[in-house]
Every structure is written in C-alpha cells, then in structure tokens.
Length: 125
Image (cartoon, rainbow, N blue to C red; front, side):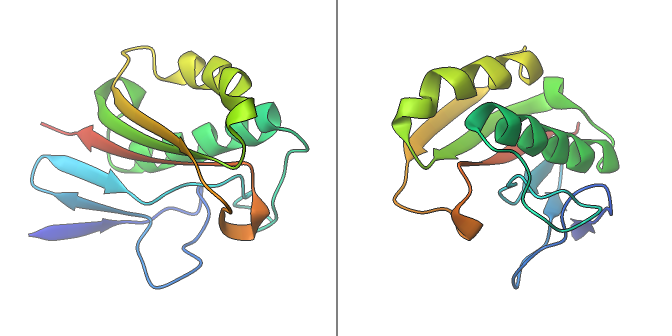
C-alpha cells in the first residue's frame, strides 16, 4: 500500500506528483528546490542560501514521514553548475552526517532556474 506524504512545511508540488510517497519501509521524496513554502517564491541569491532552503524542505518531508536525515539511505543531487559543487557539499555535509549513498550531477536547467535540487530515499523501518 502506498501512502502520500504531504505537509505545508515544504513546497507544494508544482506538477502532477506528490511531495513524497511511503512504500513499505521506505519514503521516496520528490526533488526539493529552494521554494519558501510560506510564500511559494524562490529564495536565496547563491548556492549556499539555496542549498540551505532545499535541505530545510527535505527535512520537513522527513519529519512529516516520522524520520530524519540520519535515516536517508540515498540522495540524488542536481546542480545547475558543477562549479558550485564545493559550496553545495559544505551545506550538504551539515545535514547528511551519516553519509548516505549519493549521486550528484550538473544539469542544463532546473525548474524555475534554481541552482540546486535534492531528492531523497529514507528508510523508515
């Protein structure tokens, strides 16, 4: 059985998808971008500020699912510019202290022309 995860503490889905889905003992979160959930606006003028908001949005989904960053087993990170990798990594390391498996790629364009997007898979069991 699948269960949708939905919270006003993270940005609402801007398309035909859910914020996150719980399937068995795992939560699969859709990619989070630096949208302030209260205003619906993109925030952060640089990669550090945008990454901080992305991590807070990820944290809101984890909290709603009853878990936290320590139970994330896989992340997929998307950067608009691989030149931002080191600065992004500094923010990332503050949140994912258990060092889950990860892929990080640069892409041509992200939704709303943001600088980063992160999706996670967390173990709930």
